[in-house]
Length: 276
Image 1: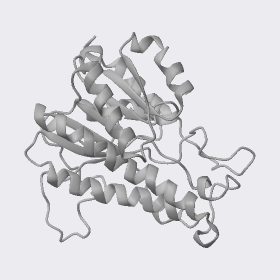
Image 2: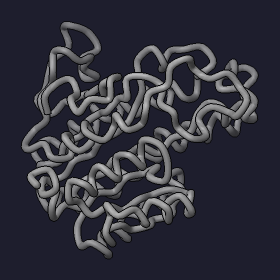
Image 3: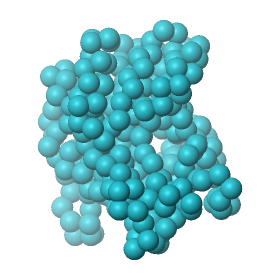
Image 4: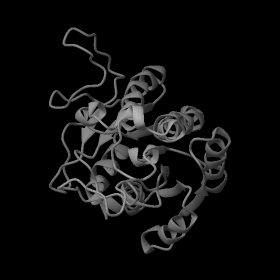
């Protein structure tokens, strides 16, 4: 019962909610009592999610392309108009490197990549998260409480060959998180980073019939840490056990506003590393 009530009265937006990790996190928030607005371009996927019993009528289909500012603004306005508030934003919407490879491969060298596809990856994965946070921050600041959680990737993936656009988009998002956190210091709104800990079995990320990683994580591992970060009270604390995106070197100054970078466990247990 305590878990059901943990987010009672809270309103959350989850981007990329129609499939994979976004679907899992939307379900986890609803299970903890939150009202959820699912943002995605996949209208059918949102309809199927809304029909799940856990939402019990407390779900809003917000069909939007997060790379478009007008769509992001409208999604936030829809959530506010339907539920009367906005407390939590989880930016999970993302596309893979196959978008720049004509869906031929999961990876492609930067000098062979489709230029428009390359830019689209950055537009969805990095700019989309900025746009959603840009419009979500204002109502959170007015309420004096808010949680912005951005899903990124491992440091190794950011630098991997064949993933130039995907790696760049996630690295840009992590750098932006530090700036967002500094800008929001003292407002009651915090910014955190959530990392799966490895590639997840996400529909559309790996082209059918093409090589896939030998080990794929179950997206279900993202539920418990997402709910925990959304419930956290006060300023987020940094953990010495996790790579801290706010420190470029051991001599870099620290600030209490720096975001916490949590990594979901490979085992799928309800625990995740670090404190929040």
